Amino acid sequence: MGLSPSLLDREDVHVVIVGGGYAGIQLARNLKNKARFTLIDPKEMLYHNVGAVRSCTEPGFAKKILIPYAPTFGENFKQGAVTGIDAAGKTVLLASGETVKYSHLVLATGSTGAFPGKPPDGMTTTAEVTEKSEAVLKLVQAAKNIVIVGGGAVGTEIAGEIATDYKDKEVTLIHPRDKLVNGESSDAFQKRLKEILQGLGVKLVLGERVTNLDQLPTDRVENVTVVTDKGTEISADLVIPCTGLKVNSMAYKDSLASSMEDNGSLKVNNFFEVQGTEGIYAIGDCTNIPETKMAYRASMHSDLLVKNILAQETGGTRKEYKPDPFIMVVSVGRKAALGQKGIALLPEFVLRIMKARDMMTGRYWKEMGQKLPR
Image 1: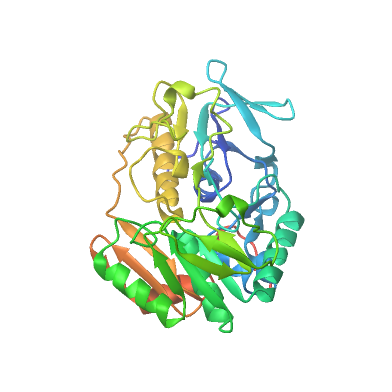
Image 2 (image 1 turned 90 degrees about the horizontal axis):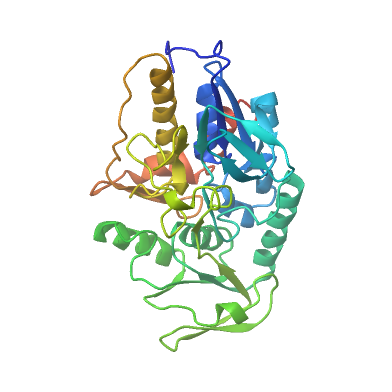
């Protein structure tokens, strides 16, 4: 933040951040030595979901995707689940019954979905999530015919990880659309991505939807048949679902219902202000901003919002958020990665170093001011 102003001497300024994902931690880091803040999250650690897929294939990797909040934020971190917001009283209510007053409330609650793309529901400790990751790793190691349901970024990356590290396994990726990862990506991106996956031996079943997922076990190795709406039948002994990303609206769905879209996201303007409220902002995946939801963009939201809060409180000029062109980066195992910005493909060798090599674990441990475990 350079020589930007500080609000530390302002007792009337207290920024409360709900959600410790990429948007929340970036905001909190930017507020250090700038203003009083409290970061609230039900978990005791950041779940680095960008790298989580590798915890399902590499023994010991789980500890690298779980970064504790307390060493970074100290007393500015409060573990708990926000269950309500009193906008008039500028107070948030925690499940414990505790209340926290704010001058600025930033909702960075992110999204929920299937593990490993998102943390398991209800698991709040490093020990619990590590145990879950290791359990999935053992399933992957024991299985021979693995079917991944859902070819978004997470499903595609898991397919790449398994096919790279376990060449003796059959891996099938089923996706209801013809384009993997993101429908906005170019034909060139799609062609190259499919080349990489098929080069690893991944079987692609595209344009077909699994119809019996609810009847299939996902927590054990067992011989089953996966059926699609086109009548395709695929034998599997392990099914990994990678579908169903949803906005995490639990903290505000009752208090801010009139400010929500039908999918649970919050309606915001170009300053991240939540429609119909005062002093309440939203950033990251829980906003209705029409852009690809990525850690990269969440950090951009956080950087600009902090600057705007400081400017607003010191008589400066705020700047509007303007989304960048389309951008997408996926790793395909530890030896390949592919990306697109605007209409251009990004250099693969750069992306291999930036993401595929260590799934950006080193970067995030360093940003949190902690040492990457070995």
